[in-house]
Amino acid sequence: MIIDCHGHYTTAPAALQTYRDAQLARLADPARPVPSEPEISDDEIRQTIEPNQLRIARERGTDLTIFSPRASAMGHHVADPATAVAWARVCNDLIYRVTRLFPANFAGVCQLPQVAGEPLDASVAELERCVTELGFVGCNLNPDPSGAWWTSPPLTDPYWFPLYETMTELDVPAMVHVSTSCNPAAHTLGAHYLNADTTAFMQLLMGDLFGRFPTLRLVIPHGGGAVPYHWGRFLGIATRENRPPIETHLMNNVFFDTCVYHQPGIDLLATVIKPANILFASEMLGAVRGNNPDGDFPWDDTKRYVDQAPLAAQDRARVFEHNIRRVYPRLDAALTARAVG
Image 1 (cartoon, rainbow, N blue to C red):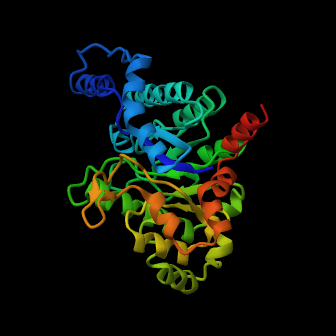
Image 2 (cartoon, helix red, strand yellow):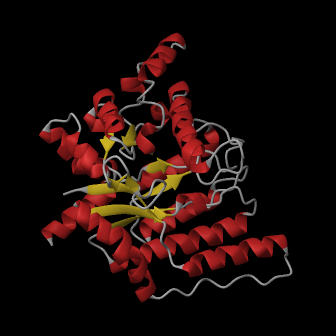
């Protein structure tokens, strides 16, 4: 089985964005009415999924995608908690409907209603709702809800502990995934995302989060940002700063996905990072769309890169399936129950 651990509903029906525009318009003019939730039919969902994510996954040989709302649209920089709660709920309910219409092809991961500087109570409540009521298998956690201004404490700070406590109780992981950049010096897709991946890893290196939460699991997307490429730098800094060895300090709890869009990058990832810490992913129809002109195949067809990476057959199977089922045990339980049933 091939599982893609990183998919977003980037093709959601237009009514979702209309609802978001109405939310933001009301924040600018409170005299406007509270917008009604978008009316989206099952047929509209099918029309946006079947010719897009589902068709392409089938063509490329992917069996199931772990699916979440569009990351760049999470909009955690919008400084209104009530708006964040309503927006997350609408987006997560839409993902739930996708998983109900295509239960063999998609598993849900939730957006959290984070707001920079605000407590995480609402995020904890939404995580609990999505896991216990909607059957979701994880969440996306934004380490910088300010939108590339980095006003929040590091991921190792007690500020985040209420969320980690709930994650460990529910036995779900988080993908550490930022949203849009509000900083003109940091391009959302080419800079902010990769900066955040690298920054998150460095925060974890300098703290002792997994000493307190030994079963907590975090997925750093986009191949880990700069981490694999600069692995020696991180090893050296850990030594200089008298930190524990990275392999025991972090790598029982931290995983990188394969959203890397060229063969040398995947080869580097597979050479530097142990296969047990790599999860197959494509972020298909996400940041990098279109074909590579040198090969005339899609940039985000990451399966072809993993197929050719320097991995033993058993390690390739771990990357494609077994590691993901280990990191997402609720998904594993659902797949096991489905097979038994």
